[in-house]
Length: 157
Image 1 (cartoon, rainbow, N blue to C red):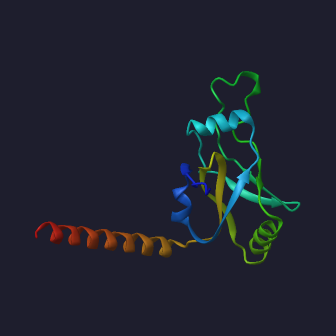
Image 2 (image 1 turned 180 degrees about the horizontal axis):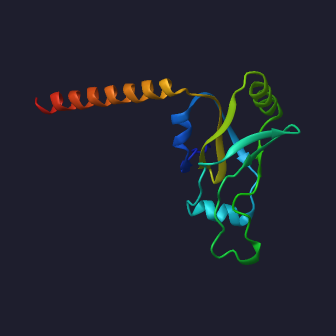
């Protein structure tokens, strides 16, 4: 009997898609404490200022803001503590190698539930220059106008 992989997105870091070209993405588990999971179940989190580092063949996410759980009393966690990411050894090696040699950045893209487990999508990224951002904005505007025009022509029939 096959399980359905229900994915529910908790938070999406749209800033990454604006500032970086995403070259390759990975799915990572996260080592969390109980009150952090409860806070994430309420949908409270922010990936805006977080970044990923590789240290001693382990991957960590820093500055990921998960606010304290309201009913958590003394067992609450620090909101921006460094959390360990769970990846396969070959994935860690690949991330470390590419970030050192090719000068790529490792960024968190989104947090989601996958079959009641919390997963973090991380990506190897290359930074966009200002002219790349302008080009992306121009392309998006053109696509929007084309879609709008085709919708108008479809409604006229």
